[in-house]
Length: 447
Image 1 (cartoon, rainbow, N blue to C red):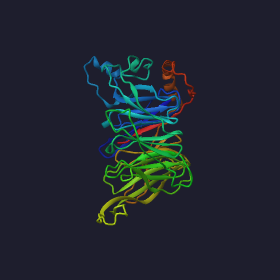
Image 2: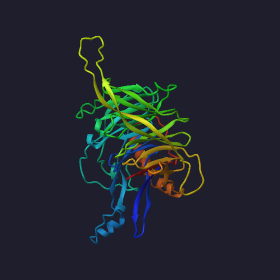
Image 3: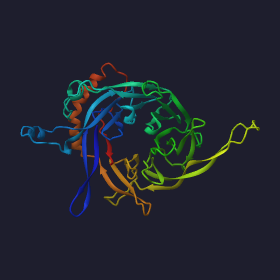
Image 4: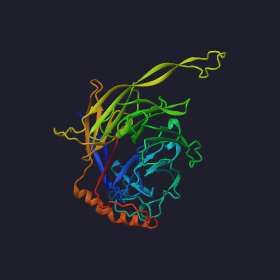
């Protein structure tokens, strides 16, 4: 497997300012398809999970090149950004079967990741390294004995094992740090479960805060395929759930201590593959993007309204009690518009296709939408504020030539196979790995 990283850079000249893209292709060291990739809150660390039952952690660090070693003898300073590269820092077997999702929590609560495989969820914590000197890992460096071929510096241990789901867990995500350390999960049985670590000093206890069926207001019982939290700190706890037919919004109701449905978007002709809530930086409205099977990418625009509500005493039997009703403002969301983006179009050619977008993600300011799907192309979308129309402003082709992919696979195949044989020597639980497949996972960093 290979991983292609895209990064947009600005090049300034005397007359104009242009955008260029640089990419880095490296071996993922996985022996099966890469199912999911997740970045931490700073974008400097990356976690990949695969069908080979392993999770790998990558760090974006400065690596000394061969030219730097030659310049060291001449006492020359070599601190250029060209030496920044993704290096494998640790790996561990997360589940007995395929690992389908991985997510990071905010660094305020430590270095935690959550993974899911089949119907179980595990929460992992990184241990503090025992030593600080290590050999930087390169593409040709074997990882059989740990990072750099020597003693492994970073290890991960299981802090909690959640097994309440009765069917496959299909989505999980930590909530924004404003609401504490909570984990939302969705499964194929249509149940969304909310877990919370009430004691940050004891991360082995994750009681279930709430659970509800996301299909109770829909036409039929459908499983949850994806979810996304509202990142705004000025909104109550709200998340979007995607199912086989709909995207619905759920908000935490403090008096009942349950999540209630506040909105259900129009029915989708295909299954919702991914949903992403845009960060709100000074806008009067929210954006939610969803991609569905069949090549349809939608952007929902929600406006924020304030309504006046009265809190009356619910005990109607106590007639002699004085009326304690009060009026307060309550935040509401209202669907304002729905935009369908032409994902099959290209800015470089006039031809169109029915390419399916599998993933969608916003940048940190919520102004650029990135989508990836069939064909190995990542498209960047921006909204024209004057007309309100969405336009594809850039494309990043993460697919490399066959020879280039084969070179990366050949270079690391022996090291990866030897490392897996050693680590799986005492764990022979059946899971067929498609070591002959040559898929490529595409990610990108948006500033």
